[in-house]
Length: 112
Image (cartoon, rainbow, N blue to C red; front, side, top):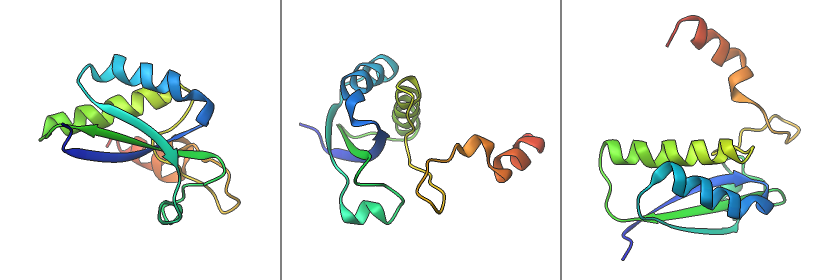
């Protein structure tokens, strides 16, 4: 029985099987993955119900580095699918590459 759920995001609903396979490859642990529509409360954090899918990952109890490993696996799987874990959008609703933001460049210049 899975005790905990993490709701994450992936773009391009057509990539669900590829995401599932990539996640299992990166995570290696036992987890149940389900895909569903973005709900209105998720739109408050920039998710778009027309283009994004909610990805719910249920796992047994995790702590410390296990949670970091889970999130790293999700990020890597999303990247493998040409997607992103969390939607970041500009004022026009277009996806933004956070690695190209002014803050990211400043942070990189400080080697943080």
